[in-house]
Image (tube, rainbow, N blue to C red; front, side):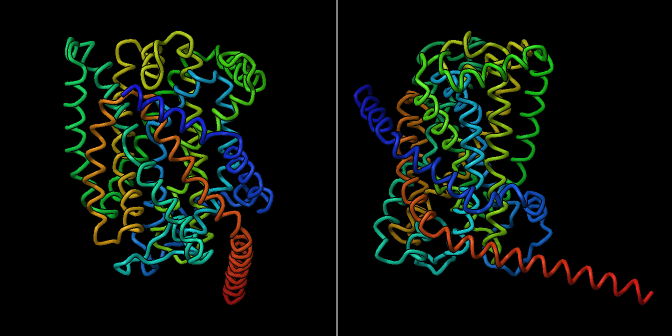
Length: 469
């Protein structure tokens, strides 16, 4: 296991080098300026689309805009926001949060382009069902000669979307916060981890074998409540430690450009750590969210791109920030033993003695399970693209088995595998989006011209009605 861990860490570190950082963050800045900061200029319209104002039940697709965003958020607003931020701060210091914010801002533009393309270049699987995602964008948008790049994405996606990080951290928090403090599971941790893993397999199987419509329905119900619950808990932590808030923000900004807190002045390392954890959390430029938004019931690519861009805002700028502040305000980043969910649990318990860790457990259960449900959909789409739609259900058997691996493996090995595969998935996603960006810009210009004409016609009709009265 130690040898495997070393191999995975070496692979992950090599993948997340300067070239990938330039591709992800440089590409995001390009999308932002090339679009004329469009994602930020049409936030209000994006929210109206999300509310269902423009829904048409006859549009092609499987789920509505809200369910598409909820399902994508079910995967992104997950353990990456609770454990991933803690891991980032443990490895890179408080300043890493600033670079996560920068990644999220450019990630909004990236999500707009990649998810618009997911609708614009939808393809069909071997059963004739409409599908979306980077592999179809590559084949339908760039042509069959680019298919090896699409297959590269799908192969990486089979492993990058495995539920091992979620099951690892969920198992850890159940053991360390619930069982061990109550005198349970104090011996033979492997057996207890295995048992928890088997329970997770059972619960996850009940949902994921129901398909995307069940996943979308469950996620649509659970995601809003989990975000609200988590936000309320952290707001309480902030209220208890309100005198430390200015100092916390000062530390974040100072360390972002000095990297002295943990990395001893290695500013480049802290930027990579921030981009790495932001990508793991909000998935901008990775391509997973494109697969979910590609299933939305719409024939307007720009409309879905606008909805998708809200993902990094909610995920990183809101939820990740709350986690980071809770850890920094309570001093957990300096005081807690270990990292991951244990550090976040320390922060919650220090602000809410006796009940804080249990509040976190409740949040973790919802965060982790919604991620477990949504990630399976990503993997089945990749498997379907590679081997045919009639075989895609076989992937779910492999998927649920890896939940057990995640439950018993070390967090280092688990994170290294997922990080490395995310890096591989980002290459086809960003390359295809950059090459096809003029298509998105042209479609956006056409869409907003049509919306302007529609609003002008509505205004004229209202004025005419008033004159008649």
